[in-house]
Length: 382
Image (cartoon, rainbow, N blue to C red; front, side, top):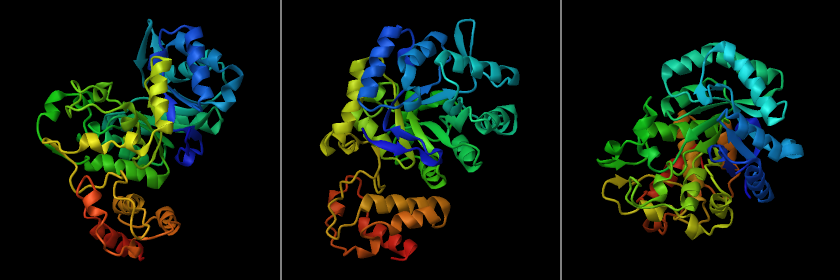
């Protein structure tokens, strides 16, 4: 298992984590069996958006004495009423729902207190300036949550939340098809077939800006909807008309700036095994570009996707990393200190490019790499 530090939270999380939806309606025995398998294979991170009492109790009992070795991400604005889940912003419901969550999980703290599902700008304003954020900050000050998170599907909203410096962790939907869609306050737009019926080119600039901003500001991202609700795994249902493998979907998301972990939706031990296959997959098995090449409606031409096909460089430059660090400076309009130090630590720099051009024909997306190295050398000074 690969572990990553989730931004400034300092939490060391497994690259493969678990969502909770697949655990709803499972018996305690089934839950324990999957948890035992997950922990035995290095998984140490789970998102718990659902307030389903039976599911949370089963998870708490499955963890038992291992609680302090496992990272739990619970949601602060979900409640269980009349046998169903509801999102709330009502101040009087926040504390009782939080206390109930701790009781059901059998713990006295959450590692991440996730403000649930903020997709609209007016909702963000209400959350940030009102009792929800005040409650989250109080819990953090009391040590009852270690850090504050927020979940969203809207890059505009997420960017503003990150810029506020009030959140430490972002839960965001990332996959190749969603990344081509512009921001919307209606999450259903991400699934709408009409939005994939016309030509689309390159990752939406706001989404790219968001990932780079998270990397620069130290806001760790954990990913939801990595398979697009399963559509990307099906040739019939994929907007691209081609099926990705689970490993390719995971590799795509894990190669975006700022991403620490994927909350995989698993309904069985077998599905968890498929996700864990990423850990030992070969470079060829992880290669998502083979699905993305040669499409008529969709194009990533001239855009570095950090896939590494340009390697090996004759001069030893890590081209994908140089491009990633350069793009971080573009996002900020300057060279942040942390980016400068990461660039400095590279063994070989953009200025070492000898202009041989061997990398460019290998790039699946036609990036002008010699030119990008010149830009990076100019930005960093060497």
